[in-house]
Image (cartoon, rainbow, N blue to C red; front, side, top):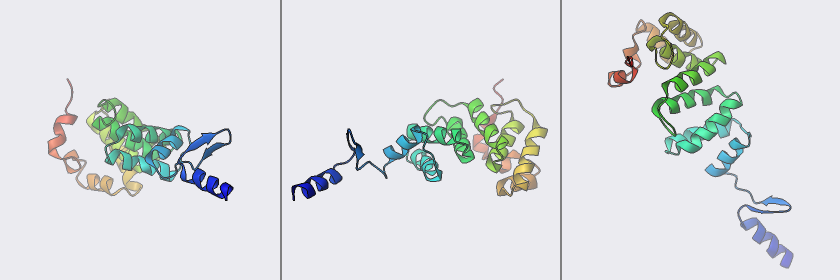
Length: 175
């Protein structure tokens, strides 16, 4: 009876560590997802949790997850890191870093990365302006089936088609 009671107590106690390891570790908490990502244990579900973190306002945790997932080659995490940098979530607003994350995703073959980096090149946002190269990347994203890239092509690459005019101030040249 004592052993049964002791076993039940151990099972009910969250995250107790002793010389035998951690008993009853957290499994379905945000902290456990972050901790797994920090240990390099990434998978699709862990990386997707970064989206939930940033949408809930926990940008610091989202960054840790996205950075670990990007390091593991998840291109969707790279485009989310670009989003974080471009909007100053969990760090300073950094258009250069945003463009770099999209470039990495594009070079890894991600259609969203191609589209985003193409637009950055067309605008000269975070990277030297190169409209021809930017259009070529948008075209690649469209060939990959990305609907918004096809929409931009259909609008003859008019960036107002995909960006609200309220955001134009953001993309204006700095000099």
